[in-house]
Image 1 (cartoon, rainbow, N blue to C red):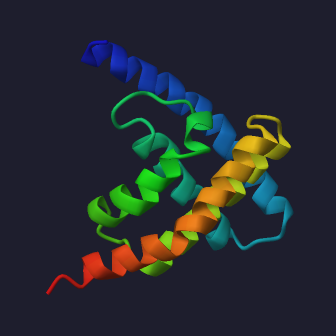
Image 2: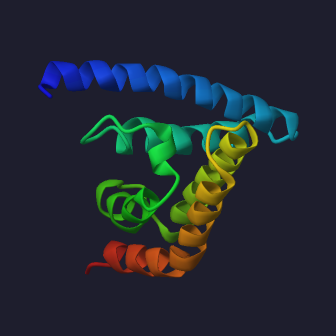
Length: 139
């Protein structure tokens, strides 16, 4: 695939992702969360599915519901995002879990995929937060 094809496929995937994000935002609004909280959740997920999942190959949103989350929160987020802290790792993980729960409830990912994502997050959260704290305290 050449660069133009990659760009075109990314644009197509971003359009699909926009629909998923709209569904997510609507569901969050129905829960009574504040506009700021909803915006934070949507922004966190948008970064994951439209930046991280598309950075090398134009991956479908569904491919982010699994082991990709480990590399994202355990390495990429810590080393490439200047705003990464142990706290932002936890809030970003919470946003992503909420998003994929919404996608499961709407039939876009399976229960098994969602449960696997939750297992990865639960099993690695302490290590990700420790690694982030260590990376941020490099002096």
